[in-house]
Image 1 (cartoon, rainbow, N blue to C red):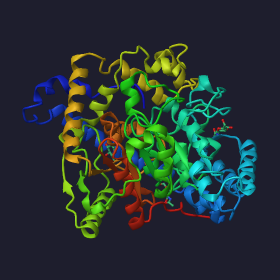
Image 2: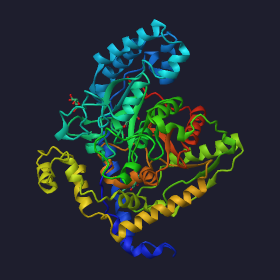
Image 3: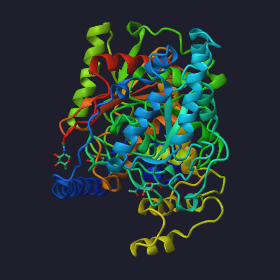
Length: 548
Ligand SMILES: *[C@@H]1O[C@H](CO)[C@@H](O)[C@H](O)[C@H]1NC(C)=O
Ligand SMILES: *[C@@H]1O[C@H](CO)[C@@H](O)[C@H](O)[C@H]1NC(C)=O
Ligand SMILES: CC(=O)N[C@H]1CO[C@H](CO)[C@@H](O)[C@@H]1O
Protein backbone atom coordinates (compact mmCIF):
# COMPACT_ATOMS: atom_id res chain seq x y z
CA UNK A 1 0.00 0.00 0.00
CA UNK A 2 1.86 2.93 -1.28
CA UNK A 3 1.44 6.64 -1.08
CA UNK A 4 -2.02 6.57 0.46
CA UNK A 5 -2.80 9.72 2.13
CA UNK A 6 -4.04 11.12 5.22
CA UNK A 7 -7.52 12.32 5.91
CA UNK A 8 -6.97 11.92 9.59
CA UNK A 9 -4.09 14.29 9.85
CA UNK A 10 -6.11 17.42 10.52
CA UNK A 11 -6.05 16.79 14.20
CA UNK A 12 -2.30 16.45 14.38
CA UNK A 13 -1.44 20.05 15.07
CA UNK A 14 -3.85 20.24 17.94
CA UNK A 15 -2.27 17.10 19.33
CA UNK A 16 1.25 18.29 18.79
CA UNK A 17 1.75 19.41 22.35
CA UNK A 18 0.34 16.24 23.75
CA UNK A 19 3.41 14.13 23.88
CA UNK A 20 3.66 14.88 27.56
CA UNK A 21 0.14 15.99 28.38
CA UNK A 22 -2.94 13.79 28.80
CA UNK A 23 -5.19 13.43 25.77
CA UNK A 24 -8.07 15.82 25.30
CA UNK A 25 -11.48 14.19 24.95
CA UNK A 26 -12.46 13.85 21.27
CA UNK A 27 -14.24 16.85 19.87
CA UNK A 28 -17.99 16.77 19.43
CA UNK A 29 -17.62 16.77 15.64
CA UNK A 30 -15.36 13.74 15.69
CA UNK A 31 -17.74 11.87 17.95
CA UNK A 32 -20.67 12.68 15.68
CA UNK A 33 -18.73 11.57 12.58
CA UNK A 34 -17.78 8.39 14.38
CA UNK A 35 -21.39 7.61 15.26
CA UNK A 36 -22.60 8.36 11.74
CA UNK A 37 -19.86 6.22 10.29
CA UNK A 38 -20.69 3.28 12.55
CA UNK A 39 -24.33 3.66 11.61
CA UNK A 40 -23.53 3.70 7.89
CA UNK A 41 -21.37 0.59 8.27
CA UNK A 42 -24.27 -1.24 9.90
CA UNK A 43 -26.71 -0.15 7.19
CA UNK A 44 -24.24 -1.10 4.47
CA UNK A 45 -23.71 -4.51 6.06
CA UNK A 46 -27.48 -5.12 6.15
CA UNK A 47 -27.78 -4.25 2.46
CA UNK A 48 -24.83 -6.48 1.55
CA UNK A 49 -26.20 -9.36 3.65
CA UNK A 50 -29.41 -9.14 1.69
CA UNK A 51 -27.67 -8.75 -1.67
CA UNK A 52 -25.26 -11.67 -1.24
CA UNK A 53 -27.63 -14.07 0.49
CA UNK A 54 -27.17 -17.49 -1.06
CA UNK A 55 -24.95 -16.11 -3.85
CA UNK A 56 -21.79 -17.97 -2.80
CA UNK A 57 -20.43 -20.70 -5.05
CA UNK A 58 -19.20 -24.03 -3.75
CA UNK A 59 -15.60 -25.23 -3.71
CA UNK A 60 -14.55 -28.45 -5.43
CA UNK A 61 -13.60 -31.02 -2.75
CA UNK A 62 -9.95 -31.96 -2.19
CA UNK A 63 -9.68 -35.55 -3.37
CA UNK A 64 -5.97 -35.80 -4.07
CA UNK A 65 -4.18 -36.39 -0.76
CA UNK A 66 -0.91 -34.92 -2.05
CA UNK A 67 -2.63 -31.55 -1.87
CA UNK A 68 -2.79 -31.88 1.91
CA UNK A 69 0.96 -32.05 2.45
CA UNK A 70 3.29 -29.27 3.55
CA UNK A 71 6.05 -28.11 1.21
CA UNK A 72 8.59 -29.58 3.63
CA UNK A 73 6.92 -32.98 3.58
CA UNK A 74 6.61 -32.95 -0.23
CA UNK A 75 10.30 -32.08 -0.51
CA UNK A 76 11.19 -35.00 1.72
CA UNK A 77 9.02 -37.50 -0.16
CA UNK A 78 10.38 -36.34 -3.51
CA UNK A 79 13.95 -36.61 -2.23
CA UNK A 80 13.53 -40.15 -0.93
CA UNK A 81 11.70 -41.12 -4.15
CA UNK A 82 8.41 -41.94 -2.51
CA UNK A 83 6.78 -39.65 -5.03
CA UNK A 84 8.05 -37.73 -8.04
CA UNK A 85 8.17 -34.02 -8.55
CA UNK A 86 6.20 -34.46 -11.78
CA UNK A 87 3.44 -36.19 -9.85
CA UNK A 88 3.33 -33.34 -7.32
CA UNK A 89 3.22 -30.69 -10.02
CA UNK A 90 0.43 -32.48 -11.83
CA UNK A 91 -1.61 -32.61 -8.62
CA UNK A 92 -1.34 -28.89 -8.01
CA UNK A 93 -1.84 -27.98 -11.67
CA UNK A 94 -5.06 -30.01 -11.70
CA UNK A 95 -6.18 -28.30 -8.52
CA UNK A 96 -5.49 -24.84 -9.94
CA UNK A 97 -7.54 -25.69 -13.01
CA UNK A 98 -10.41 -26.78 -10.80
CA UNK A 99 -10.51 -23.87 -8.37
CA UNK A 100 -9.49 -20.96 -10.56
CA UNK A 101 -12.76 -20.52 -12.48
CA UNK A 102 -14.41 -20.03 -9.09
CA UNK A 103 -11.76 -18.00 -7.30
CA UNK A 104 -9.91 -16.12 -10.08
CA UNK A 105 -6.70 -16.10 -8.06
CA UNK A 106 -4.21 -17.31 -10.69
CA UNK A 107 -3.39 -14.80 -13.42
CA UNK A 108 -0.51 -16.45 -15.26
CA UNK A 109 1.07 -19.91 -15.39
CA UNK A 110 4.11 -21.74 -16.74
CA UNK A 111 2.89 -25.32 -16.33
CA UNK A 112 4.73 -26.75 -19.34
CA UNK A 113 8.18 -25.35 -18.49
CA UNK A 114 7.62 -26.22 -14.84
CA UNK A 115 6.89 -29.86 -15.72
CA UNK A 116 10.12 -30.05 -17.71
CA UNK A 117 12.00 -28.75 -14.67
CA UNK A 118 10.18 -31.23 -12.45
CA UNK A 119 11.34 -34.07 -14.68
CA UNK A 120 14.89 -32.72 -14.43
CA UNK A 121 14.63 -32.66 -10.65
CA UNK A 122 13.43 -36.27 -10.68
CA UNK A 123 16.32 -37.32 -12.92
CA UNK A 124 18.84 -35.61 -10.67
CA UNK A 125 17.47 -37.49 -7.68
CA UNK A 126 17.35 -40.81 -9.50
CA UNK A 127 20.89 -40.35 -10.86
CA UNK A 128 22.33 -40.78 -7.36
CA UNK A 129 24.89 -38.01 -7.99
CA UNK A 130 24.03 -36.67 -4.54
CA UNK A 131 23.15 -38.52 -1.37
CA UNK A 132 19.80 -37.74 0.25
CA UNK A 133 21.63 -35.73 2.89
CA UNK A 134 23.45 -33.68 0.27
CA UNK A 135 20.25 -33.07 -1.63
CA UNK A 136 18.59 -31.82 1.54
CA UNK A 137 21.43 -29.42 2.20
CA UNK A 138 21.93 -28.08 -1.30
CA UNK A 139 18.34 -28.20 -2.60
CA UNK A 140 16.00 -28.21 0.41
CA UNK A 141 12.92 -27.67 -1.80
CA UNK A 142 14.00 -29.73 -4.80
CA UNK A 143 11.04 -30.42 -7.08
CA UNK A 144 8.50 -28.53 -4.93
CA UNK A 145 6.16 -26.18 -6.83
CA UNK A 146 5.55 -22.66 -5.54
CA UNK A 147 3.66 -19.53 -6.56
CA UNK A 148 4.12 -15.82 -6.11
CA UNK A 149 2.20 -12.60 -6.68
CA UNK A 150 1.95 -10.65 -9.91
CA UNK A 151 4.35 -7.91 -8.77
CA UNK A 152 7.37 -10.03 -7.77
CA UNK A 153 9.36 -10.72 -10.88
CA UNK A 154 9.67 -14.21 -12.30
CA UNK A 155 11.60 -14.42 -15.56
CA UNK A 156 9.24 -14.72 -18.52
CA UNK A 157 6.06 -14.32 -16.51
CA UNK A 158 3.67 -11.39 -16.27
CA UNK A 159 4.63 -8.62 -13.88
CA UNK A 160 1.67 -6.24 -14.03
CA UNK A 161 1.11 -5.28 -10.37
CA UNK A 162 -2.53 -5.08 -11.47
CA UNK A 163 -1.73 -2.00 -13.50
CA UNK A 164 -3.39 -1.73 -16.90
CA UNK A 165 -0.38 0.04 -18.43
CA UNK A 166 1.67 -3.05 -17.57
CA UNK A 167 -0.84 -5.62 -18.72
CA UNK A 168 1.59 -7.21 -21.19
CA UNK A 169 4.77 -6.55 -19.24
CA UNK A 170 6.87 -9.63 -18.49
CA UNK A 171 9.81 -10.09 -16.16
CA UNK A 172 13.25 -10.23 -17.81
CA UNK A 173 14.85 -11.66 -14.68
CA UNK A 174 13.91 -13.18 -11.33
CA UNK A 175 13.48 -11.03 -8.23
CA UNK A 176 16.24 -11.73 -5.69
CA UNK A 177 13.95 -13.78 -3.43
CA UNK A 178 12.76 -15.86 -6.41
CA UNK A 179 16.37 -16.50 -7.48
CA UNK A 180 17.14 -17.82 -4.03
CA UNK A 181 14.15 -20.11 -3.73
CA UNK A 182 14.74 -21.47 -7.23
CA UNK A 183 18.35 -22.15 -6.30
CA UNK A 184 16.95 -24.22 -3.44
CA UNK A 185 15.22 -26.39 -6.04
CA UNK A 186 11.66 -25.00 -5.91
CA UNK A 187 9.80 -24.57 -9.19
CA UNK A 188 7.51 -21.58 -9.93
CA UNK A 189 4.23 -22.72 -11.48
CA UNK A 190 1.88 -19.75 -11.38
CA UNK A 191 1.37 -16.09 -10.52
CA UNK A 192 -1.43 -14.75 -8.38
CA UNK A 193 -3.63 -11.67 -8.35
CA UNK A 194 -2.99 -8.40 -6.50
CA UNK A 195 -4.70 -5.05 -5.97
CA UNK A 196 -4.00 -2.20 -8.40
CA UNK A 197 -0.38 -1.18 -7.86
CA UNK A 198 -0.45 -3.38 -4.72
CA UNK A 199 -1.94 -0.56 -2.74
CA UNK A 200 -5.34 -1.70 -1.54
CA UNK A 201 -6.60 -4.47 0.72
CA UNK A 202 -9.00 -6.02 -1.78
CA UNK A 203 -7.36 -7.83 -4.71
CA UNK A 204 -9.19 -6.49 -7.73
CA UNK A 205 -7.93 -4.66 -10.81
CA UNK A 206 -8.79 -3.94 -14.42
CA UNK A 207 -6.20 -6.39 -15.80
CA UNK A 208 -7.32 -9.64 -14.17
CA UNK A 209 -10.55 -8.83 -12.35
CA UNK A 210 -11.35 -9.70 -8.77
CA UNK A 211 -10.37 -12.66 -6.58
CA UNK A 212 -12.93 -14.47 -4.39
CA UNK A 213 -12.48 -15.88 -0.91
CA UNK A 214 -12.46 -19.72 -0.86
CA UNK A 215 -14.42 -19.81 2.42
CA UNK A 216 -17.19 -17.75 0.92
CA UNK A 217 -16.94 -16.33 -2.57
CA UNK A 218 -18.98 -13.28 -1.56
CA UNK A 219 -16.00 -12.11 0.54
CA UNK A 220 -12.67 -10.47 -0.18
CA UNK A 221 -9.30 -12.23 -0.08
CA UNK A 222 -7.47 -9.14 1.17
CA UNK A 223 -4.57 -7.45 -0.53
CA UNK A 224 -2.19 -6.97 -1.93
CA UNK A 225 -1.03 -10.64 -1.88
CA UNK A 226 -4.72 -11.63 -2.02
CA UNK A 227 -4.52 -14.09 -4.90
CA UNK A 228 -1.67 -15.82 -3.10
CA UNK A 229 -3.54 -16.13 0.20
CA UNK A 230 -6.53 -17.47 -1.68
CA UNK A 231 -4.61 -20.04 -3.73
CA UNK A 232 -2.77 -21.34 -0.68
CA UNK A 233 -6.01 -21.71 1.31
CA UNK A 234 -7.66 -23.51 -1.61
CA UNK A 235 -4.76 -26.01 -1.67
CA UNK A 236 -3.74 -24.87 -5.15
CA UNK A 237 -0.08 -24.39 -4.21
CA UNK A 238 2.06 -25.75 -1.38
CA UNK A 239 4.11 -22.57 -0.90
CA UNK A 240 3.71 -18.87 -1.65
CA UNK A 241 5.95 -15.82 -1.64
CA UNK A 242 4.23 -12.53 -0.81
CA UNK A 243 5.25 -9.01 0.13
CA UNK A 244 3.99 -6.63 2.79
CA UNK A 245 4.31 -2.85 3.27
CA UNK A 246 1.07 -2.23 5.16
CA UNK A 247 -0.20 -5.75 5.80
CA UNK A 248 -0.09 -7.21 2.28
CA UNK A 249 1.07 -10.63 3.50
CA UNK A 250 -0.66 -10.68 6.87
CA UNK A 251 -4.13 -9.50 5.85
CA UNK A 252 -4.57 -12.03 3.03
CA UNK A 253 -3.09 -14.72 5.28
CA UNK A 254 -5.67 -13.80 7.90
CA UNK A 255 -8.69 -13.55 5.57
CA UNK A 256 -7.78 -16.89 4.00
CA UNK A 257 -6.84 -18.72 7.19
CA UNK A 258 -3.18 -19.47 6.44
CA UNK A 259 0.22 -18.47 7.87
CA UNK A 260 2.05 -15.40 6.61
CA UNK A 261 5.28 -13.90 7.85
CA UNK A 262 6.60 -10.38 7.31
CA UNK A 263 10.30 -10.59 8.17
CA UNK A 264 12.28 -8.06 10.20
CA UNK A 265 13.19 -4.95 8.22
CA UNK A 266 16.03 -5.14 5.70
CA UNK A 267 16.42 -8.91 5.92
CA UNK A 268 14.96 -10.13 2.62
CA UNK A 269 15.97 -8.25 -0.54
CA UNK A 270 13.06 -6.40 -2.17
CA UNK A 271 14.79 -6.18 -5.54
CA UNK A 272 12.59 -7.18 -8.45
CA UNK A 273 9.20 -5.86 -7.32
CA UNK A 274 6.85 -3.28 -8.74
CA UNK A 275 6.11 -0.71 -7.40
CA UNK A 276 9.64 0.00 -6.23
CA UNK A 277 9.83 1.67 -2.81
CA UNK A 278 10.45 5.40 -3.25
CA UNK A 279 13.23 5.62 -0.68
CA UNK A 280 15.33 3.60 1.75
CA UNK A 281 12.88 4.29 4.54
CA UNK A 282 9.96 2.80 2.57
CA UNK A 283 12.18 -0.09 1.55
CA UNK A 284 12.61 -0.90 5.23
CA UNK A 285 8.82 -1.05 5.72
CA UNK A 286 8.44 -3.52 2.86
CA UNK A 287 9.17 -7.19 3.43
CA UNK A 288 9.02 -10.27 1.18
CA UNK A 289 8.00 -13.36 3.10
CA UNK A 290 6.42 -16.81 3.08
CA UNK A 291 2.67 -17.54 2.89
CA UNK A 292 1.65 -21.13 3.53
CA UNK A 293 -0.86 -23.50 5.11
CA UNK A 294 1.59 -25.21 7.44
CA UNK A 295 3.75 -23.52 10.09
CA UNK A 296 6.58 -25.97 9.42
CA UNK A 297 7.23 -24.31 6.05
CA UNK A 298 7.81 -20.82 7.42
CA UNK A 299 11.31 -21.32 8.76
CA UNK A 300 12.97 -23.10 5.82
CA UNK A 301 11.42 -20.63 3.38
CA UNK A 302 12.52 -17.59 5.35
CA UNK A 303 15.99 -19.06 5.71
CA UNK A 304 16.27 -19.46 1.96
CA UNK A 305 14.91 -16.10 0.84
CA UNK A 306 16.91 -14.21 3.49
CA UNK A 307 20.10 -15.39 1.73
CA UNK A 308 23.22 -14.13 3.49
CA UNK A 309 21.12 -12.30 6.06
CA UNK A 310 19.63 -15.54 7.38
CA UNK A 311 22.48 -15.78 9.87
CA UNK A 312 21.29 -12.55 11.53
CA UNK A 313 18.06 -14.34 12.44
CA UNK A 314 19.60 -17.31 14.20
CA UNK A 315 16.62 -19.34 13.08
CA UNK A 316 17.89 -22.67 14.33
CA UNK A 317 18.35 -21.54 17.91
CA UNK A 318 15.76 -23.43 19.94
CA UNK A 319 12.90 -21.41 21.49
CA UNK A 320 11.60 -22.44 24.88
CA UNK A 321 8.16 -20.88 25.20
CA UNK A 322 8.34 -21.12 28.99
CA UNK A 323 11.00 -18.43 28.91
CA UNK A 324 9.21 -16.16 26.49
CA UNK A 325 7.54 -13.02 27.83
CA UNK A 326 4.03 -12.58 26.39
CA UNK A 327 2.25 -9.27 25.91
CA UNK A 328 -1.10 -8.71 24.26
CA UNK A 329 -3.36 -5.89 23.24
CA UNK A 330 -6.99 -6.48 22.35
CA UNK A 331 -7.60 -3.55 20.04
CA UNK A 332 -6.17 -0.26 18.89
CA UNK A 333 -8.22 1.49 21.53
CA UNK A 334 -10.82 2.93 19.17
CA UNK A 335 -8.98 4.81 16.46
CA UNK A 336 -11.01 7.34 14.50
CA UNK A 337 -13.41 5.50 12.18
CA UNK A 338 -11.87 2.13 13.03
CA UNK A 339 -14.29 -0.61 13.87
CA UNK A 340 -14.31 -2.46 17.13
CA UNK A 341 -12.76 -5.92 17.09
CA UNK A 342 -15.22 -8.75 16.33
CA UNK A 343 -16.39 -10.71 19.37
CA UNK A 344 -15.20 -14.09 18.08
CA UNK A 345 -11.82 -12.59 17.22
CA UNK A 346 -11.49 -11.31 20.77
CA UNK A 347 -12.57 -14.67 22.16
CA UNK A 348 -9.89 -16.37 20.06
CA UNK A 349 -7.24 -14.01 21.42
CA UNK A 350 -8.40 -14.80 24.97
CA UNK A 351 -8.11 -18.52 24.26
CA UNK A 352 -4.56 -18.04 23.03
CA UNK A 353 -3.64 -16.12 26.19
CA UNK A 354 -5.26 -18.80 28.38
CA UNK A 355 -3.40 -21.53 26.52
CA UNK A 356 -0.01 -19.99 27.15
CA UNK A 357 -0.87 -19.42 30.81
CA UNK A 358 -1.86 -23.05 31.31
CA UNK A 359 0.65 -24.84 29.14
CA UNK A 360 3.75 -22.78 29.89
CA UNK A 361 2.98 -21.23 33.26
CA UNK A 362 3.68 -17.79 31.82
CA UNK A 363 1.76 -14.63 32.70
CA UNK A 364 0.82 -12.81 29.50
CA UNK A 365 0.60 -9.13 30.27
CA UNK A 366 -2.18 -7.00 28.85
CA UNK A 367 -0.87 -3.73 27.47
CA UNK A 368 -2.48 -0.77 25.75
CA UNK A 369 -0.24 1.34 23.58
CA UNK A 370 -2.07 4.63 23.16
CA UNK A 371 -0.22 5.31 19.92
CA UNK A 372 -2.02 2.43 18.18
CA UNK A 373 -5.13 4.58 18.19
CA UNK A 374 -3.33 6.84 15.75
CA UNK A 375 -1.93 3.97 13.70
CA UNK A 376 -3.45 5.25 10.45
CA UNK A 377 -1.97 8.72 10.85
CA UNK A 378 1.40 7.36 11.89
CA UNK A 379 1.63 4.92 8.98
CA UNK A 380 0.46 7.44 6.40
CA UNK A 381 2.80 10.11 7.76
CA UNK A 382 5.79 7.79 7.77
CA UNK A 383 5.08 6.69 4.20
CA UNK A 384 5.65 10.29 3.00
CA UNK A 385 8.83 10.68 0.96
CA UNK A 386 10.62 13.34 -1.05
CA UNK A 387 11.24 11.34 -4.20
CA UNK A 388 8.70 13.35 -6.18
CA UNK A 389 7.14 10.08 -7.35
CA UNK A 390 3.51 10.28 -6.33
CA UNK A 391 0.84 7.61 -6.64
CA UNK A 392 -0.54 9.14 -9.85
CA UNK A 393 2.93 8.62 -11.37
CA UNK A 394 3.06 5.04 -10.14
CA UNK A 395 -0.33 4.44 -11.76
CA UNK A 396 1.26 5.82 -14.93
CA UNK A 397 3.91 3.10 -14.68
CA UNK A 398 6.53 5.79 -13.85
CA UNK A 399 6.46 6.90 -17.49
CA UNK A 400 3.78 9.54 -17.11
CA UNK A 401 1.55 11.01 -14.46
CA UNK A 402 -2.11 10.13 -14.89
CA UNK A 403 -4.67 12.86 -14.33
CA UNK A 404 -6.73 11.61 -11.39
CA UNK A 405 -9.59 14.08 -12.04
CA UNK A 406 -9.98 13.12 -15.69
CA UNK A 407 -9.66 9.40 -14.90
CA UNK A 408 -12.28 9.70 -12.17
CA UNK A 409 -14.68 11.32 -14.62
CA UNK A 410 -14.00 8.44 -17.03
CA UNK A 411 -14.47 5.97 -14.20
CA UNK A 412 -18.02 7.18 -13.62
CA UNK A 413 -18.75 6.44 -17.27
CA UNK A 414 -17.14 3.02 -16.97
CA UNK A 415 -14.20 3.75 -19.24
CA UNK A 416 -11.24 4.24 -16.92
CA UNK A 417 -8.57 1.56 -16.79
CA UNK A 418 -7.97 2.36 -13.13
CA UNK A 419 -9.82 1.28 -10.02
CA UNK A 420 -11.96 3.68 -8.02
CA UNK A 421 -9.83 3.10 -4.95
CA UNK A 422 -6.61 3.74 -6.88
CA UNK A 423 -7.92 7.10 -8.07
CA UNK A 424 -9.23 7.98 -4.64
CA UNK A 425 -5.76 7.35 -3.27
CA UNK A 426 -4.31 9.95 -5.63
CA UNK A 427 -6.70 12.58 -4.25
CA UNK A 428 -6.09 11.57 -0.67
CA UNK A 429 -2.33 11.79 -1.20
CA UNK A 430 -2.61 15.37 -2.46
CA UNK A 431 -4.10 16.32 0.89
CA UNK A 432 -1.74 14.17 2.91
CA UNK A 433 1.28 14.80 5.08
CA UNK A 434 4.18 16.36 3.18
CA UNK A 435 7.71 15.11 3.65
CA UNK A 436 9.72 17.43 5.89
CA UNK A 437 6.66 19.28 7.22
CA UNK A 438 6.13 19.77 10.94
CA UNK A 439 3.42 17.11 10.87
CA UNK A 440 5.74 14.69 9.17
CA UNK A 441 8.51 15.25 11.71
CA UNK A 442 6.02 14.86 14.52
CA UNK A 443 4.76 11.54 13.14
CA UNK A 444 8.27 10.20 12.62
CA UNK A 445 9.10 11.07 16.21
CA UNK A 446 5.88 9.51 17.40
CA UNK A 447 6.82 6.30 15.60
CA UNK A 448 10.38 6.38 16.95
CA UNK A 449 9.12 6.80 20.50
CA UNK A 450 6.68 3.92 20.10
CA UNK A 451 9.46 1.76 18.68
CA UNK A 452 11.74 2.48 21.65
CA UNK A 453 8.93 1.69 24.07
CA UNK A 454 8.10 -1.58 22.36
CA UNK A 455 11.73 -2.61 22.02
CA UNK A 456 12.18 -2.10 25.73
CA UNK A 457 9.14 -4.25 26.40
CA UNK A 458 10.04 -7.04 23.95
CA UNK A 459 13.76 -7.35 24.65
CA UNK A 460 15.21 -10.44 23.01
CA UNK A 461 12.62 -12.88 24.32
CA UNK A 462 9.27 -11.07 24.20
CA UNK A 463 6.32 -11.42 21.84
CA UNK A 464 3.33 -9.17 21.34
CA UNK A 465 -0.04 -10.65 20.35
CA UNK A 466 -2.39 -8.33 18.50
CA UNK A 467 -5.37 -8.83 16.13
CA UNK A 468 -4.28 -8.94 12.48
CA UNK A 469 -7.49 -7.16 11.58
CA UNK A 470 -10.58 -6.09 13.53
CA UNK A 471 -13.05 -8.16 11.50
CA UNK A 472 -13.19 -11.37 9.49
CA UNK A 473 -13.19 -11.04 5.69
CA UNK A 474 -15.76 -8.42 4.65
CA UNK A 475 -17.85 -8.53 1.47
CA UNK A 476 -16.41 -7.43 -1.86
CA UNK A 477 -16.08 -3.63 -2.04
CA UNK A 478 -16.88 -3.25 1.64
CA UNK A 479 -13.26 -2.18 2.43
CA UNK A 480 -14.04 1.21 0.87
CA UNK A 481 -16.30 1.94 3.84
CA UNK A 482 -13.72 0.48 6.24
CA UNK A 483 -10.71 2.21 4.78
CA UNK A 484 -8.50 2.40 7.81
CA UNK A 485 -9.07 -1.07 9.23
CA UNK A 486 -5.79 -2.10 7.59
CA UNK A 487 -3.81 -0.13 10.12
CA UNK A 488 -3.74 -3.06 12.57
CA UNK A 489 -1.04 -4.48 10.34
CA UNK A 490 0.40 -1.26 8.88
CA UNK A 491 1.65 0.12 12.17
CA UNK A 492 4.00 -2.87 12.47
CA UNK A 493 5.56 -2.08 9.07
CA UNK A 494 6.71 1.41 10.05
CA UNK A 495 8.13 -0.02 13.25
CA UNK A 496 10.05 -2.60 11.20
CA UNK A 497 9.40 -5.55 13.49
CA UNK A 498 8.83 -9.11 12.25
CA UNK A 499 5.23 -10.37 12.47
CA UNK A 500 3.45 -13.61 11.67
CA UNK A 501 -0.26 -14.08 11.02
CA UNK A 502 -1.51 -17.32 12.55
CA UNK A 503 -4.88 -18.92 11.71
CA UNK A 504 -7.15 -19.81 14.66
CA UNK A 505 -9.98 -21.77 13.08
CA UNK A 506 -13.25 -20.48 11.64
CA UNK A 507 -15.60 -18.01 13.30
CA UNK A 508 -19.37 -17.96 13.42
CA UNK A 509 -19.70 -16.76 9.81
CA UNK A 510 -17.59 -19.70 8.62
CA UNK A 511 -14.68 -17.36 7.90
CA UNK A 512 -11.10 -17.65 9.21
CA UNK A 513 -10.08 -16.11 12.53
CA UNK A 514 -6.50 -15.35 13.44
CA UNK A 515 -3.95 -13.28 15.22
CA UNK A 516 -0.58 -11.70 14.55
CA UNK A 517 2.44 -12.17 16.73
CA UNK A 518 5.17 -9.53 16.72
CA UNK A 519 8.74 -9.69 18.07
CA UNK A 520 11.76 -7.42 18.29
CA UNK A 521 14.16 -6.91 15.36
CA UNK A 522 15.64 -10.15 14.04
CA UNK A 523 13.79 -12.25 16.63
CA UNK A 524 11.62 -13.74 13.87
CA UNK A 525 12.20 -17.18 15.32
CA UNK A 526 10.03 -16.30 18.33
CA UNK A 527 7.09 -15.53 16.00
CA UNK A 528 7.64 -18.81 14.18
CA UNK A 529 7.77 -20.79 17.42
CA UNK A 530 4.47 -19.26 18.56
CA UNK A 531 2.99 -20.08 15.15
CA UNK A 532 4.00 -23.74 15.43
CA UNK A 533 2.57 -24.00 18.94
CA UNK A 534 -0.75 -22.38 18.05
CA UNK A 535 -1.08 -24.59 14.99
CA UNK A 536 -0.62 -27.62 17.21
CA UNK A 537 -3.32 -26.43 19.63
CA UNK A 538 -5.85 -24.71 17.35
CA UNK A 539 -5.44 -26.90 14.28
CA UNK A 540 -4.05 -24.30 11.85
CA UNK A 541 -5.42 -24.22 8.32
CA UNK A 542 -8.91 -25.64 7.85
CA UNK A 543 -9.83 -26.88 4.37
CA UNK A 544 -12.52 -24.59 2.88
CA UNK A 545 -15.94 -26.12 3.37
CA UNK A 546 -17.26 -28.31 0.63
CA UNK A 547 -20.79 -27.25 -0.15
CA UNK A 548 -21.54 -29.34 -3.19
C1 LIG B 1 -21.71 -17.01 2.47
O1 LIG B 1 -22.18 -15.68 2.56
C2 LIG B 1 -23.55 -15.52 2.25
C3 LIG B 1 -23.84 -14.04 2.32
O2 LIG B 1 -23.51 -13.55 3.60
C4 LIG B 1 -24.41 -16.29 3.23
O3 LIG B 1 -25.76 -16.19 2.87
C5 LIG B 1 -23.97 -17.75 3.22
O4 LIG B 1 -24.64 -18.44 4.23
C6 LIG B 1 -22.47 -17.87 3.46
N1 LIG B 1 -22.08 -19.25 3.25
C7 LIG B 1 -21.60 -20.02 4.21
C8 LIG B 1 -21.24 -21.39 3.82
O5 LIG B 1 -21.43 -19.63 5.35
C1 LIG C 1 -13.62 -1.31 10.52
O1 LIG C 1 -14.47 -2.44 10.71
C2 LIG C 1 -15.44 -2.37 11.72
C3 LIG C 1 -16.27 -3.62 11.74
O2 LIG C 1 -16.48 -4.06 13.01
C4 LIG C 1 -16.34 -1.17 11.59
O3 LIG C 1 -17.24 -1.05 12.68
C5 LIG C 1 -15.48 0.06 11.49
O4 LIG C 1 -16.27 1.17 11.35
C6 LIG C 1 -14.50 -0.09 10.37
N1 LIG C 1 -13.79 1.15 10.32
C7 LIG C 1 -13.06 1.67 9.33
C8 LIG C 1 -13.38 2.98 8.79
O5 LIG C 1 -12.11 1.17 8.88
C1 LIG D 1 -12.59 -12.93 -14.14
C2 LIG D 1 -11.40 -12.44 -14.85
O1 LIG D 1 -11.30 -11.26 -15.15
N1 LIG D 1 -10.46 -13.33 -15.13
C3 LIG D 1 -9.21 -13.00 -15.80
C4 LIG D 1 -8.05 -13.31 -14.89
O2 LIG D 1 -6.85 -13.07 -15.55
C5 LIG D 1 -6.65 -13.85 -16.69
C6 LIG D 1 -5.27 -13.54 -17.23
O3 LIG D 1 -5.14 -12.16 -17.46
C7 LIG D 1 -7.76 -13.56 -17.72
O4 LIG D 1 -7.60 -14.41 -18.84
C8 LIG D 1 -9.11 -13.79 -17.07
O5 LIG D 1 -10.13 -13.40 -17.94
